[in-house]
Length: 255
Length: 255
Image (cartoon, rainbow over the protein chains, first blue to last red):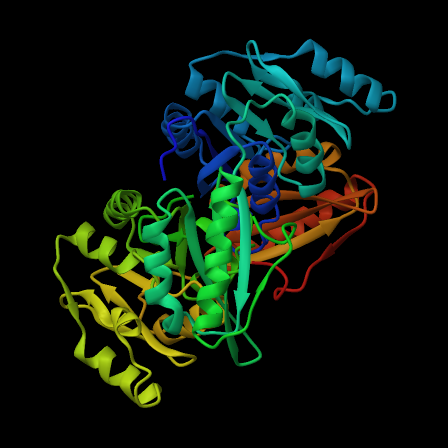
């Protein structure tokens, strides 16, 4: 699909706890959907460990390749929270204690509670803009096209909602979905032909398997609503012509 | 932590549906835990789209950097299932119709149902070994250190369970976890000192936030059970010395 104007993004999920399987990631889907809402294409996600040189190298690769990079994780007060210093190193910037962040945290904590470990959360690359944290105070930050957010899902979501409106998206990706009880193998040939007739619509086929039954969701995505509608109608007709049952999923379910 | 003998792996999750947010990934954690069980360290996960050159480049980077690479997604019968051809291109191998895979599928499908689209699932790089699929028949495959599996979670799990025992792991990573009601900021200084005293134990601090309450899981990981036990005892003592409540999570919960 031609996407010369597409605005692109990558997400870096930073955290040993995801790679060890201890924690189920709960951030990817929220960010992916949120970016889709505003016409930003999430092109790649990388889950990487809390290792300085890995963060630096991955960030430098991704910030050069995509319009936006989002990171989650590693901005707390403990010894394993190394994202801020790694981001500074990636940009060749000094770390400084951000006065605005200190002020926010000073107002948040009771007298005497804002210790050195917590103040570490205000240490950011020079020139960072804050990403506000309406849940627990300590902010994330932005340097150029890189947004650094917390890993705790409740906090990450609040931070992402804060910045979402300042992001510049491209034409929003529209999507529709058709579910059928036909197996993929029965529909594959006709679906391939449909894809060829609609080169500007991206047609995905996603089999599911529940309770020993197979089914398929056909997801059609594109930026032209009218062309998308025609392709969707044809997908439904294809399913029915093959003797299957087909139904369009509500737009809210699809993406 | 010194890990000269560590056996490492990367996971490539191939699928537009994850990047669009339409589908929540359900494979990463299963594979991560399974690898942990046998002493293989999952070092990196990449979620990438169904785009040939992206799959080829990512696979070639990862198969050179890690002992094992696992992929999920893109091996079905439809036009958007391009993983097998991309893997062949990455290795510079021809695609051929694997006779053993055809035989398995021939036994699986009723007469006349094994059409050309389904037979495409038997097209694999020359010399592939099959990864058996006890759920729905059509197998995945292995080329050198790369294991190619289905994306549908129920099928992926069955495939992974099939191959798990043939993987060669390193010393298993042991882990213990202490949960406390103390906030991270209160425990950070003592925890950093504990980490310095135990350089061979990897101590992670994972805050959680539920119902407007914060808590922290301290996860200690290492390959020496005795050293790990001592560090865990010290972590519990640290929490209690700071006036917090601490409890060791059961080993099943941790990783």
